Length: 335
Ligand SMILES: [Mn+2]
Image 1 (cartoon, rainbow, N blue to C red):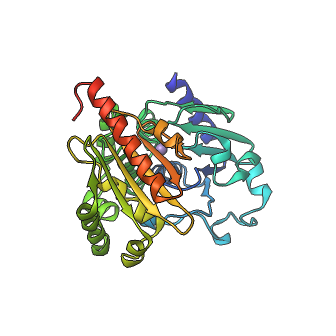
Image 2 (cartoon, rainbow, N blue to C red; image 1 turned 120 degrees about the vertical axis):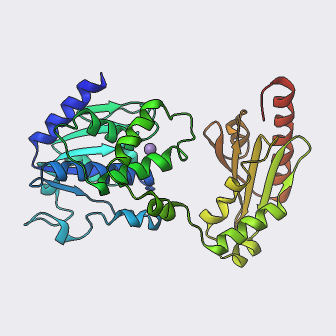
């Protein structure tokens, strides 16, 4: 099944002179790595093809993988970047996006043909060819599998391998999440054989500013753990100002609470001018129903919510504590 899809995709890439690559809004390591990796494979194999990634969204965090095709100088001769004609005779490949409304550059619909390559739940199938494998740990893994299937015909540079490896590492939590299979590791091995400088790559991905580590230490000093095993931290506006934290950086504090034995649910409350944003996480048990009761929702073990007072915050904590108690009473094997 997937071999048929991959063969059809290879034929389409062969057929078109211009190929445009698309990804999702709020870019991450996987969608950036997968589009850049695919671009590298196509251009390494067919240097005369035009391959462009046109996206206004960038991440400073991923800038080390190189720029996208942003300026008119990057465009083929005779075209400006937003001209419809640029798209109309092109093949569009959308990678790591579940539904069409999440594609960052909506002009992908203008492409003559569209291919979807994705690993999310296929709620909204789209594209002339749709290759979706929901059990893949990342879209980068799929692009690596595509390369591996045709490695006698395709080329890839060390940079291309680095882009794909970046997405595999970030989307799988450094190969820790459930989706990681034997095939993930075999494909990662194939990429490493291309000569990736992992010391530099991991430095880009994981070094932190000293100021951020001081905030981490503040979180551990100030967190509270309830009787039944809920850890939580309240980051007030004063603390955010003191550590010069963006909303995102303050919200990351929920991750610092993840590794506490016996704590099955952990929460970060971030005070803003209007309300208190909540990040909820859990292992073994789920938290999405809890989030839904407090103006939120999300994934089974990772959700978001909003409360509007300290009373409501305390109610949420008490609710979480009760749920952990119930879970522990009714289940074995948790840690
Ligand atoms: Mn992904």
